[in-house]
Length: 135
Image (cartoon, rainbow, N blue to C red; front, side, top):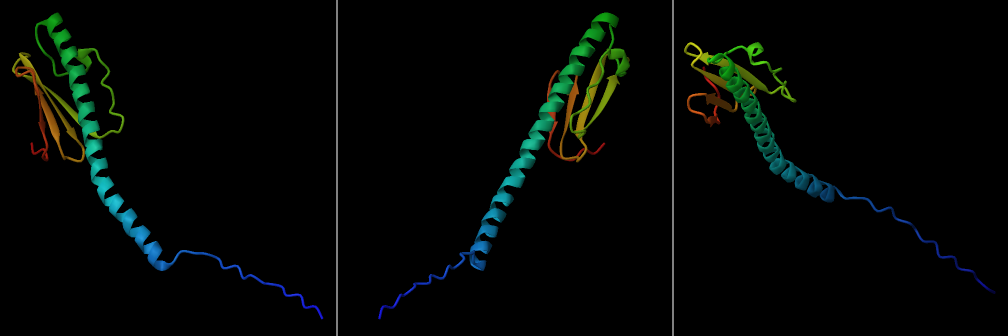
């Protein structure tokens, strides 16, 4: 007699073991630990770059105002510029007239109080401070 043998293959579903999943979680955790500080540094550099740009806008407007009137101002309206709003709303600006219109000072700080910049018209240079601002 003939016997027909049928080979039944049992299909095993392949799945991840608990150890494999834990290893993947550890690798992702290490990558996130490295990436977050780098992201914060890039974000801060972006905000500082934006602050430099804003100070440049004010400097050109103050110079033009001085050429017209012979003195500086502390009023945004007198400068004839619409102060551009920061895209991420993270900066605080303060424009101050020094003396009786003989100079001006601008202070730009981030709202998280991690750094601040200052510009004095007499010095002509922007100074960065990477510490909390204490008035």
